[in-house]
Image 1 (cartoon, rainbow, N blue to C red):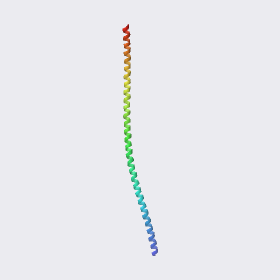
Image 2: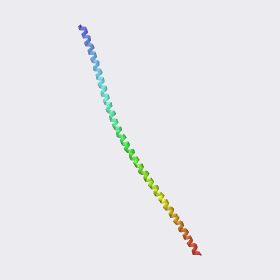
Image 3: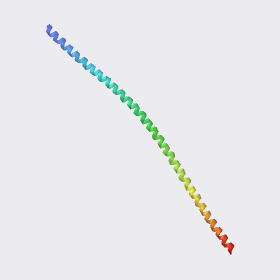
Image 4: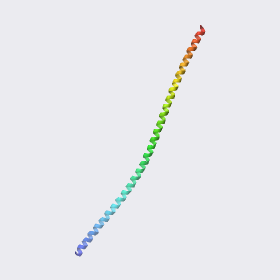
Length: 110
């Protein structure tokens, strides 16, 4: 091998090593960016998980409130029905009293 061939090989090897260093640096920068993006996605996923858990708790609380409201409405309806029944009986009693009073008045006149 001649000095010229050795020099060409040395230049080729240095060029290849420089390109390899540049590619390695780009790869390292890309890796750092991917790590940063991964951390961001992980953080956002954790925040989303917390928001979903809070929303789930809110839905559960709302469902419980709706159930309680429905039970209260049913109780009010039941009490209203009982009140209507009692009022109906009171009207019947009042009508019987009027009828009795009318009969007594009529019988006193006779």
